[in-house]
Amino acid sequence: KPQHVILQGAPLDCGKNRRGCIMGPDAYRTAGLVEALESLGHTVTDIGNIGPAPYTEVIHPKLHRLSETIAWTQSLADATEAAFARGMPITLGGDHALAAGTVLGAMRHAAAVDRPLFVLWLDAHSDFHTLESTDSGNLHGTPMGYLTGRSDFPGWPDLPASLPYENIAMIGLRSVDPAERAALQQTAITRVDMRQIDESGIATPLGAFLERIEAVNGMLHVSLDVDFLDPAAAPAVGTTVPGGATVREGHLVMEMINDSELLTSMDLVELNPFMDERGRTTRLMVDLAASALGRNVFDRPTRAF
Ligand code: ARG
Ligand code: MN
Ligand code: MN
Ligand code: MN
Image (cartoon, rainbow, N blue to C red; front, side, top):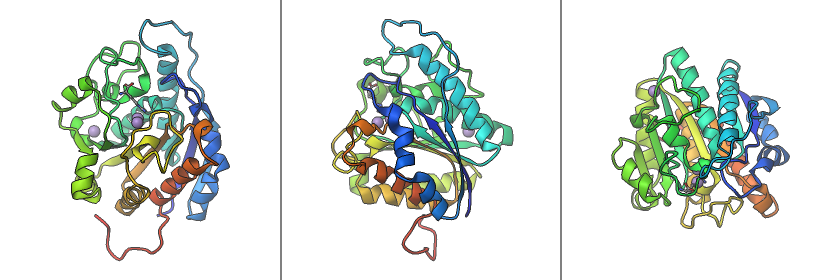
C-alpha cells in the first residue's frame, strides 16, 4: 500500500576505522532510490543529511570515536522519532553504529503508540558487543548490545525500556566473535546462521518471525547491512565475509517483508561507495529497498508467509 517515505541521510563514518560510508547517502541518491520508490506509487520526502549533535571528542584508550558515536545516536534518535509522525523513516547510512540511534527513535515511537517493536537484523555479524567486550573498539559492532540493555553504555541516551530479546531476529550470521556468541546463546534472540539458511531456506525462519509480529500488531524495523549479502554480489563494504546471502535470497526476504505489510522503518547500512564496482552494490541495495516497498513481477494471489 502507498506510503509516505521519509529518507534521511546519515553519513556516519565513526563506527570503524576504514573510511567511505560517509558517501553512502549520496550514492543511494545517485543510483535513483527516490525515483525507484516513487515509481512504486509512494511519495518520498528526502530531508537531506543529518549530522551528529554537538560534541567534543574525548579520546578513549580503546573505543574509536566514542563521543561522535554518542552524538549521532542522540541526533538520529530524535530525527527518526520525528520522522514517524510524517511517514516511514528510511535511513541511508553510514555504518551500522547508526542503528543505535534509529532503533532508539523507533523504540520511543513504539512506546508512544503502545505497540511492540520488532527488529529484523540482516547481517553477517550480530553487532552484540558491549563497550567492555569489543576487541576491535569499533562501535559498529555494538548497537545490539546497547539497544538490548545488556550492559551499561555510560553517556549514551537512556532507553525507554530495553529492546526485548524475543523481539529480535538476526538472519545471515556467519561472523560472530567468541564473546558475542557466548552472550547470544544465553538470550531468546532468534539467530539464523547461514547453515540454517542452507538447510531450511531463508523463508521458513523469516515467515515464522513475521507471523509472530503480526499476531501482536507489532512494528517492524529492518536493519540491512550490506555484508548480509555475499561479497561476490555486494563488494562495497569494509567487512566482507564470504558465504553470504544470494541476490535471490535478499530479494525473497524483501518481498516477504512487503507482503507482510508490517514494515514501519528501515536502515540501509555499511555501504562503502569508495569500494564499489561501477555502482553495482549501490544499485543492488536500491533494488532490495524497492522489493521491500512493493516491486515485484506479479502480485501474489496469497501472501508468501
Ligand atoms: N565483530 C566485529 C567487531 O566487533 C565486526 C563487527 C562488524 N560490524 C558491522 N556492522 N559491520 O569489530
Ligand atoms: Mn552490522
Ligand atoms: Mn517491544
Ligand atoms: Mn555486518
